[in-house]
Length: 346
Image 1 (cartoon, rainbow, N blue to C red):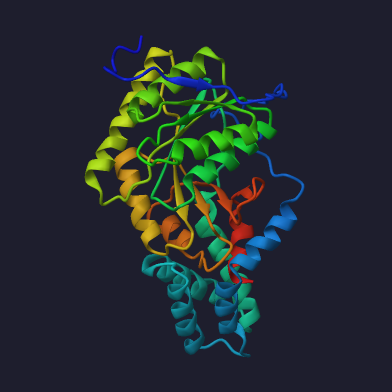
Image 2 (cartoon, one colour):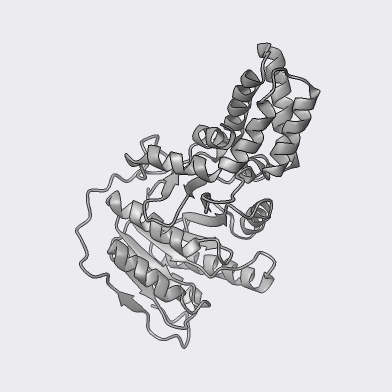
């Protein structure tokens, strides 16, 4: 069955200790309008407070533009500069300013406070295409490849996502396909143990082989989700990007062998929220190579400017499934356009 991968050592399946029985899972097929499986927990308000704190410096910088008593050309010029400094990018900034001028004229806005409210509405509309829930099905397991550059928080995000899915009753199988980094396998094993889920790994093996075996194992064990951790790489490392493309092709073959269509169903990119306009370059490169279906934005708890989401929405609107503001398991939340616009501007 696995003869496609020659001279690889056997895959080691490591069951997590003290595994708990899963809760009932409400699987949401992608073609329905039912609620997504990943629902917001009751502590969202506390999380929003932390998000606002993380984006506080940017919010203060933009809000200072509206501190005067009149709307004039100088205000619009200062606002343009503030948005560019927040990493919104030229295209998104021009779009926001043009719409703001139009809305201010239509509504006959007279004060900077009114103008700021219009900007929140405009940013919300710009970010709206990024607001999309992660759903499971209609075929199971849902196979999710997770990519990202080194240091973006990719493996930690997988751990957090596993925690969310497990809390919702989904059965998850992790695949330690980051075989290039020495500690990656051990790190993912720790996350598997913390979340009481199983992991498929292979010491020093071929990442494509691990991915193939994980998909087949997920189907055989009737898992709801297979999360595949891939090696961190820069989009300029062309040989590594080619390796990532190979992994996706192998996952597709594994899906075909397991009776799954459109496998992997999800290809996620994890982005460090502190990387500014480089984040947009990463989205372009990984989307061109893999066909991204979603993003996870991390580290929005320090010096992150946050405006890069506006640039992404304007130039490469890949949905943002989750954003993170800390290291704790529960500090990964679904993206909401209006909440984010308010955190960034108010």
